Amino acid sequence: MAGTTDSGGGRRGSPWRMAVWGAAALVLLLPLVAMQFTGEVAWDLADFAIFGAMLVCACGAYELAARATGNRAYRAAVGVALAAAFVLVWMNLAVGIIGNEENPANLMVGGALAVGIIGAVIARFQPHGMGRAMVATALAQALVAVIALAAGLGHNFVLTGFFVALWLASARLFWRAAREQAHAVAAP
Image (tube, rainbow, N blue to C red; front, side, top):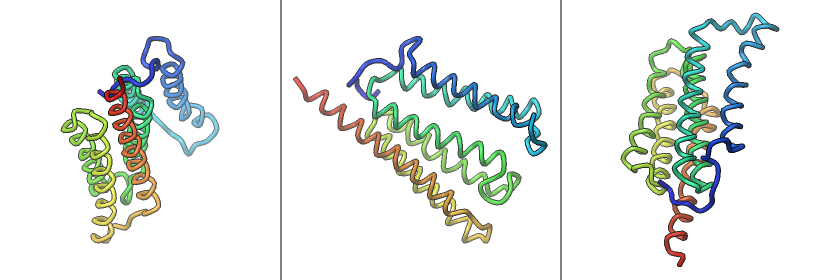
């Protein structure tokens, strides 16, 4: 995948692996705790199941990337991209990015994520191509905001800017991983 420049992280029982899965378990428990203190949070079994499935998918994808490479920049890039995708999907399902969660215009946000996923597959998960895929995702995310604004749907540009910044940060980390991979190959 990204070449090995350092070891660790993906092996069984590593502190990072346990931290990722432990954090996911704690995040899954937060709504349950919040429900004990406020009526504003009212999750049912389906909400917990969907949220849990999202956490398993995100953590599982991160673990696959961590096991495939020892390159810290690549792992960080994957972590940033997965965190951005996770929060974007979670927000879109919970309250909607464009209007409320039932607004069909929110499907455009899924299109921006599809750009990243398709780009990653085309790049074969290689770091340089992944950087390009993340830039394309950032552009698609910005385009969603422009289309929503042009259609009179309104949009939160601060929120869009936040996600664009995350996609671009991930791209930068992927390019750093590509440089490190090239140096590792060139070194005797």
